[in-house]
Amino acid sequence: MPSAMNAAAQRVQAAFRKGTAIPSFNIPYHAMMAPVIRALRDTRTVGMIAVARLEWTKFEAGSPEAIRDLYGTLRDPRLTLLHLDHCPVIDEDLCRVDFMEVLTRAVKAGYDSVMVDASRLDLAGNIAATRQVVAMAHEAGVPVEGELGAVLGHEAGPLPPYEELFASGRGFTDAEEAARFVAETGADWLSVAVGNVHGAITAARREAKVAARLDLDQLTRLRAAAGIPLVLHGGTGIRREYLQEAIRRGIAKVNIATAIRQPYEALRQSDPEGAGEAVYRSAIEQLETELGVAGNAALLPATC
Ligand code: 13P
Image (cartoon, rainbow, N blue to C red):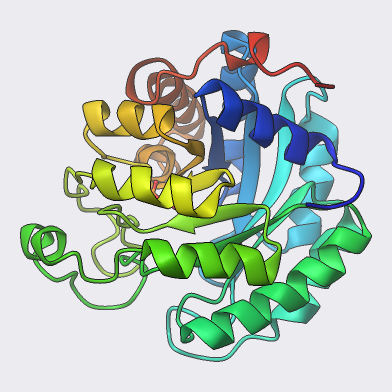
């Protein structure tokens, strides 16, 4: 935990304690940010505006600084936070990334929280890389999310059949490893793999996602072992009963990308205004119906 907890750290901790979650919306196109913030405001929900490295290398986010600048003009300090999502150590194309350069830039740019994803390394490598980021970010009071286990979906090529993946538990986060990871890295939040998968970003990116399930018993074990707020990536398309139970069991932050990106991409050329409305409607649906976290601001005061 950083010595002085910033607002992002405080609010995720409060969500964890109270059995609710903070939604984190990815912004691969600048025009998606305003409707997401409008949805948060209209539902009085604390939420994150997030950008991942692949959204400025493969989509149109530009850079962490470009997103920060736009966020500065749209933010609602009572409700919104700025998060740097997935900075991989080895990326989805299996190339090494100068992750310290990217993450140091993000902290300097004023991001409220950052994620280092060293999950493609072995456990010792993941711990070493995450610990390095924690040391840098905590100097600035910025909380760090790490990832343990394999949340598939961003890689090129098709996913293994989902039911096979779920039944085998392949890549699921292990509880003993989670305890060690938290103790040795000092990470603030842990992204876990319990049946969740990312929406595709390559050839299959327009296809509907599988209706994922979650291993809720494993999630309970992970909460006990890790003892810190857990994060669920691949938030789009998880069956609602699993998603909402996972939030009650320790998921304090849920990442949503595909659910707002696909409706935006379907309309952005032909009807840019309609594309923004589609993002707004989808964000509202996620908050109110899928996650059931609309109005969480009442539970998560800015200083708690
Ligand atoms: P989805 O695309 O499945 O919503 O996942 C988003 C995510 O986890 C971004 O980090």
